Length: 504
Ligand code: FRU
Image (cartoon, rainbow, N blue to C red):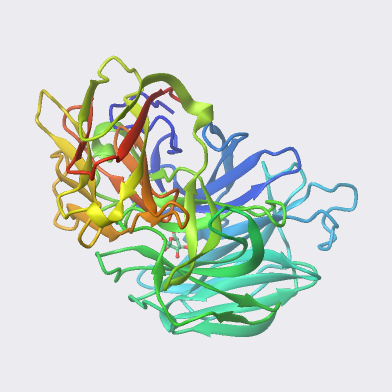
């Protein structure tokens, strides 16, 4: 692949060429190598002809492209989304002489000339640690006549395997159990929860640590995620999640609320790595796009590829005042791709503007910590704004936080002009209250941004809120500015800006 195009992300995964959608089969092996597979059309710039592409990484930022792992087995039968596990104890019998056997689960979707055929669940096994796969001769392992039954995600629970599979148009996640990854028994349905949209896709069931506000682990709980498409509140695709209890066969959410993993439009179908040690934060990666416009974005015609994955996130649950257990999406430390630190400074009500046109990657990592906020003196004018712009075209990607009023954290891509599409909505916002230290009574707020040519991710307060935003400038954005205004006396803003080095 050629990763030099002006819109090509330098610290996010994108395929060598062609069209990519959902992350699939994510697992980490015993050597600490992360395997990422993905829905891949290697021969076109739109969805279809689904294979499983494959890439590996040791640090979740540098990815190495591998050979395509799964191919369409027959004409008009495509390999849809799914997951993978390491069968260390050879429960499947595929791996008598090894502990690194990998089993992949995926939907085979059959198409007739004029209609969709059944979607069935199938497996393939790998004797070489996940690089090449053999189809199991007893497929399908979960048969069906439904044309809308897909995206198996498998985990281990105490003494058996568990699969969650979407009955997409019945708004149900089926929960199945198995002793050996081959024989599956239906156990229960999780149905009609949260946003329905028009379909449920790509469910995940994942165990997460629960942490207190100091970060100490106080327990564990499960989260069910459901990707909804089309029909997201902002249009198209979005992922919702439900914290709750799982007993090996049934998932019971703690409450009836709908919670979203991202407050913008470009984070769908995230998957959680299999094999992360028990008790540790989960690690997830999402597809950074939206079905409403993914097949039109300009990277296709200009550079021959479409879609990137989100940056990796660490996930845990935290109890938030009034709103209950919330899943934190914390950016995994980008240390492996940090280059020169361009700026480190502390100020009050002031601003900073940097020209980074000399940074070859055109990618930055920014942190701003606002501390010593006297909340009794905060007015609705108190803001911190972060803007990336192009001096030559005047385009700008803007964001900011209002410390008073309704506390919106907002992003606006409307002044970037390289893509015109009715569904490519401009503005996103979320409420995010600065948190107050109970001893000092002073509040603080933290923002991180990972800016990468045509994708930027924002994290507020270490991942209490997260947003993934695509933008397509006609000229590279090469100026960054941070400006604090009307903060109460005593407030300090500590800013650090790093250049990123290309991972490609
Ligand atoms: C979600 C999805 C999945 C399906 C795959 C096909 O984006 O529609 O439900 O398996 O894409 O590529």
